Image 1: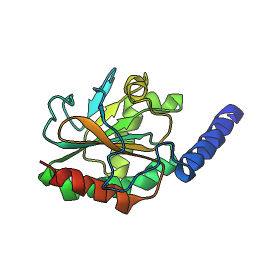
Image 2 (image 1 turned 45 degrees about the vertical axis):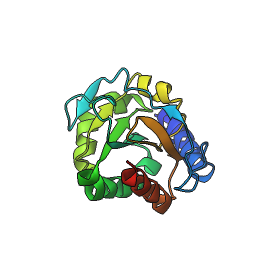
Image 3 (image 1 turned 180 degrees about the horizontal axis):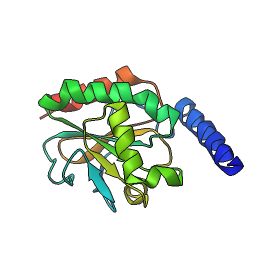
Image 4 (image 1 turned 60 degrees about the vertical axis):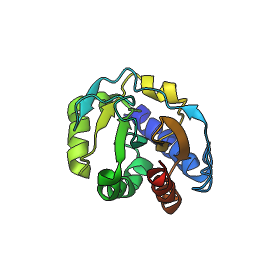
Length: 179
C-alpha cells in the first residue's frame, strides 16, 4: 500500500511538471510544430467504443490523439475540453482517439477502463495501450499529451499537460479548415 501511495505521489508530481513545463511547448495555432508522419497505432490490446482504427483509415480527417490514464488527475481535468471538441467538431471531420496508457497495474484491467469511460462519459474511441507500444511510437513521455494529426497524416501540433485549451481548439479549427 505504501508503494502505491509513493507511486501516486510521484505521478502527481510528474503530471504537475508536465502541466507547468510542456516538453513540446504548444506553438501558436498558426504554427506547424512538426513535419513528421504520425506513427500508426501499435500494440493496442483492446479498442473500446469503436472497432479497431488505423490512421490510414482516417486519412482526410483531423485526428486528436489524447494519451491519458484514468487515475491521473491532470488527465481527468482535460476531459471536459476533449469531450467538448469531440462533440463540436466530429461532424466537421475531427476524430478524437483516447490512447489509455496505464501507469499502475489496476489501470491495465479492461473492466476498470470500461468503468472509467462510463463514469467520465467518454463516447469517442479509446485504444488500450497496456504495453506502451503506441506511447513509444510517438516518443511520448507524459500524461496527458495531445497530438493533432492533419488530414495528410502528419503530426501538426502537440501539447503536454493541462491548459492552453483555447490554443489547442484554435489548432483544431485551423487544421479542419485546411484542404
